[in-house]
Length: 216
Length: 200
Ligand SMILES: [Zn+2]
Ligand SMILES: [Zn+2]
Image (cartoon, rainbow over the protein chains, first blue to last red):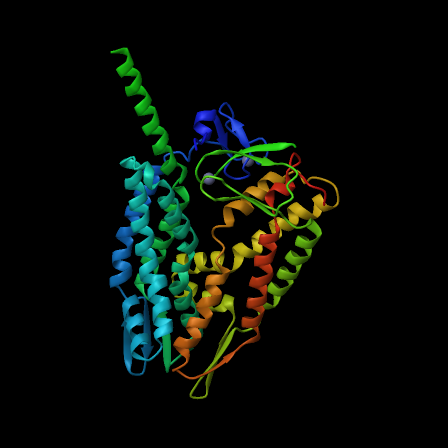
């Protein structure tokens, strides 16, 4: 079936309240948001935020996430140390939850974002629906990478026994949080409709070359 | 049949949704994105939002966990935990965690009441579009459920260190999240615009 998109119909959708406007409108008369046919500079912004997030993930994984100070001395642990600790102490469930939230989710999100961007650059229109499915997944699971940050915050708040034991936030926490926030902004700025626009681009291209043939 | 023309926010296709919809949701025929979900009457949503806000009040002083190590006691509310992170100098982490885990859901509920209470009483607040825009922008950043699960993970982590008691604040937080979640699911933004409004 042939679908008519907003580009062909010469319309644009307000993403905030979903009112359909003609192209001449710049500000939605219903909710006051700016209206654009596609999110402006979507691809460039997504690229830059994704790359920044990848860079921040490096210190996030190498530096200690939290430091336990006790009579026995200081014990600084990275994210992976935390996962291993749980696996070794028979709490495999929690270990897997932390691994999924802090290591798998951020890497998966960024991989998917790069894959989607490549699909747009390479005009792979047949991958649009699959890409949208992936996009929905990363949109849904994105916030869960914040889990470990909250855990660190709670532990720091709870374990404050002056001489016996205290827990302090480690430097990785800030890098990790920056990576998570940037990935979330990147996902927000990515416009999934661009995946489907590739088909339009192809169709136009085909029509043009057909016309060229008949004239010859 | 009156038809409302709109476009799919995820694939860009033009769709026509029948205005007098007698089904509870409408999906994009091309990509299956959820384009319309019937909302509940404003009075239901207001009641649920007020309940959620009332459940939030005790969270400011009820401890979520009590920890007992060798006779030394420590207990902490959700806010105190983040306050310690702030005091350690990690302002950014404390701020983002405080906003996403606790304050954004609360602000969303308040904005919803600002929109719905006047509408329910028959007049349109002047700033309804501003309130709605803020509400909509925040909806992706509310992470109360993540905070909730993180409490459970912390409990398991702290389990070995000493005796642990779950505080009343934890149960309150669960109920707060459930009522918050129901409120947002019941609210259908289409109902607040004049040209789409259904009778409430
Ligand atoms: Zn609008
Ligand atoms: Zn669609």
